[in-house]
Amino acid sequence: MSPGLPPRLLALSPGDLVLGEGLVARRADLLERVRAAWRGGLRGVLLREPQLPDGVLWELALDLGAILDGGWLGLHDRPHLVRGVGAQGVHLGFRSMSAAEARLCVGADVAIGVSTHAGDGPATWEGADYLFHGPVFPPLSKPDQLAPVGPVGLQEFVDLAEVPVWGLGGVTPERAPAVIQAGAAGVACLGGLLADADPALACAQFAEVVAL
Image 1 (cartoon, rainbow, N blue to C red):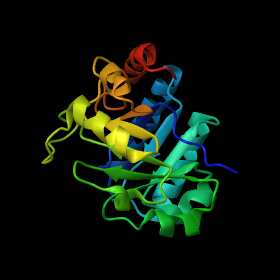
Image 2: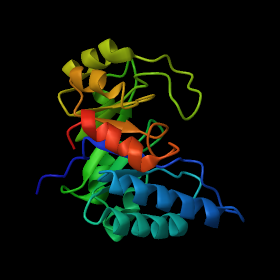
Image 3: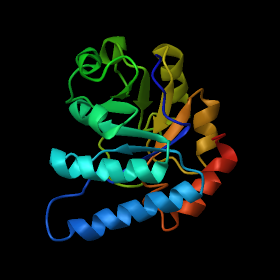
C-alpha cells in the first residue's frame, strides 16, 4: 500500500505545550482551534509538541484524530507512536532519525516527511515520501535564524527534490499562490492558521487559493 501524503493545506500545532497547570487550558484551546479550522475546510494536522511526554502526546493525538474525522494526522519525531494513534504520517527534523530508520518502525503505508532548508542535498531526505522546505517567507509564529528562500529558492528546490514539497514559513492566504506557483504540492503553516485569531476564517481564505 502506498502512503497517503498530507493534504495541500497542512496545519502545525504550536510546538510549545509543556507539562504544568496551564496545560489543560492550552490543550483545550488547541483542540478548539482545530475544530474551528476543520469547519473552515482543514483536513490535516501535524502534531509537533517536543516537550510533551509520550503518554500525554498519545492522548492529544487521539483527540485530534477524532476531530479530523478521517483526515490526515502526522506526528513529529514520534514514529513509535504512529501505529497506536492511527496517524497517517511521521515527520522528521534534522535532529531526528533518518527516513530509512523511521520506515522500519512505521511500515510502508505511513507517509514519512523530512524538513529541509537551503543547501540540503538529496542524502538529507533519502527514503522520504514528502518534504517541507523553508522558510519561504519570514515566519509569523517565531523568529528564525535562517534567511527566507523566497518563491524562487523554493522553485529551485522543488525542481531538485523529485518528491512532493510543502512550502513552510510565513505562508498566509495572500502568499500561498506564490508557493503553489513555485511548484509546491502544498503549504504547511502555524502562524497563518491555528495561531490566527479566527482559524475557521483563515482556513476558508486558504481554501480559496489552495485547492483542498
